[in-house]
Length: 256
Image 1 (spheres, one colour):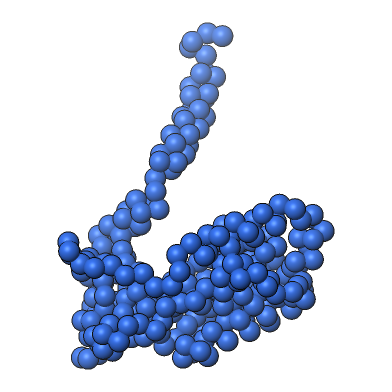
Image 2: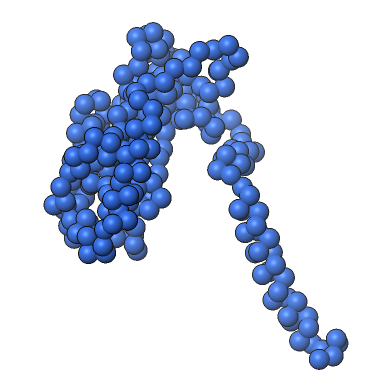
């Protein structure tokens, strides 16, 4: 083929985007979640600036907004995706509803705030929609909401092609200027952990070992709302997270 053939420029025109795509994919492999968040934060600050009433935005467990002369609002959002954050074969619907709220309550507690309101959006594939899975999911959500004083004020429900997607948003409040931020930590500060470490990881390992022995037929039956609750203590620790909404007395006094 002659080098002055008109086909050569055409091939180069088509190959260049492919090369750029391969380079972009290689860059994506090296990018961490924290790098991505830092990049989004820079874009948000550059494009939106410091909005009125915004105390703290991207980069902590939650955003902080000025509510009034004496109170601040704390807002957090969490996304749960099937086969990434949970597996349908091992996650009971009621327990998953509990978890959807628990993960957001933990963020609110980490900010030293008290949870008040929640918004919950769920995307379901058709095979799950036709069961009572969603009813039991919301039953688990409302059970934890009742224990923690959280009121559901909105959300959305939609269909997805294959997997379950859950978006949880919780709003809390604290005294003005008393939100506990990550950048407030200083050398010499003492760190405390509540609960028992390692239980959730052990529970996940136990669930995954059981999952490998299940057949496709068992997986399909697991989508039914009639599946039994798991009785293993470690399995329940994995699925029924206990949000640390009850803060130590001194932290509650500072925040509320």
